[in-house]
Every structure is written in structure tokens, then in C-alpha cells.
Length: 231
Image 1 (cartoon, rainbow, N blue to C red):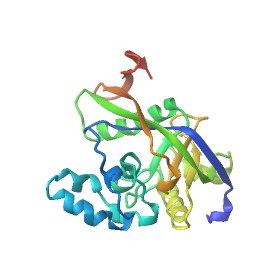
Image 2 (cartoon, rainbow, N blue to C red):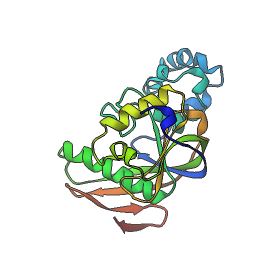
Image 3 (cartoon, rainbow, N blue to C red):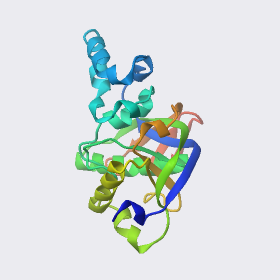
Image 4 (cartoon, rainbow, N blue to C red):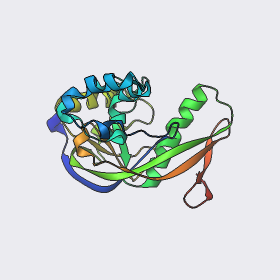
């Protein structure tokens, strides 16, 4: 499976949706680093002497080349805070910025993966707040939205071996990322972005609360409309 085997698609989504856990108040780390991005590690280390959380927020910054660093904490967090369990398009050794074309798709994707983690940890019933970001993503992406036999291994519901191997090849080849059809919300598109400069700094759009009943997340509360919605 080589890069030329798949078409490329120009993506210009002015409202790409991303949902992340809302555990801590966001800090403006990368926005405040005004020097050359190549010096960010040193500057952050100096700042962390008085604010230990800076070191935590900086994450694995060495994995992002200076020319691919952007002044947006909401963007950079996806690339410097790695998920050791990996994801569809990463084995956990590098970060990916996942986003969806519609909010409902982002909800369904994040609910599915959060359910998997909560079940694995035998989590007790709880309400889990999520932060919703929206912003523009523009670039040329490897196109996996076509219904062909070759795509089946890459979009397997729970087996990520082929998709991780493919994504690593695409990332190493310098691709912006991958556009694909959501497995958790069929018929709707999502993005796996490898290069931060494709992403404009997103804005916080609203908060949601996912209700975990001990086995499933079947509803969520929208703080903007003050309503519960069934999934």
C-alpha cells in the first residue's frame, strides 16, 4: 500500500469539530511563546521552574519539528500529548488531530472511544464534561472516502493494525493527513491531521456532559441549550 495508490482530496472545512475531555481549565502556553519555535523547549523549561504545569502542558514537543509548530495550545495539544493506547491512525508514538465535519459525528466518535476506555477500567457511573472546539482545517488529504475493496482493512471497526501501518507511511511521506468516512457515524466525514499548520486556531464553542451509566453513554447534556439528548 503505497502513497500513489490513493487519491488526494483538497479539504477546506471552515467549521471542523473536535471534542476533548474538559478536565482542566485551558492555559495559553503556546500562544505566549513568541520566540522562534525552535527555542520553545528551552523557554518552557525556564517557565516551568515557577509553574510546574507548563512542563506537563508542553508534552512531547520534541516530536513536532519547529517548522510544524503553531501558536495554538488547542492544536498543539493533539500532537504533544500522546495516547499510549494509540488510535485508528496512530500506534501511540505520534499525535494526530482528529476532527469531524459535523458536531454530531464528533460526538458519536468520542462517545464510542470513551465508552471503550471506561469499560476497560470498570468505571462506575459518572458524568463527564467535554469541551467542543470548532475551527478551520485546510489542506490536501489522502482520500479514504471512496467505497473500494482496498479500503476495507483500513476502516475495520476495531482492528487498527492496517490503518496504523498505512497512516505511519503517509505521515512519513509528508502528507497533511487523511480524510475518511466515520466508522461510528456512517456517511459522514472525519479528518486525521498530521501537520499542525493545516489547522487554524479553533475556538471553544460549547461544553457537553456525557452520562456514563456504568456500561454505556446513551445521552448527553448540552450546556448551550440546557437540554439532554439521547444517542
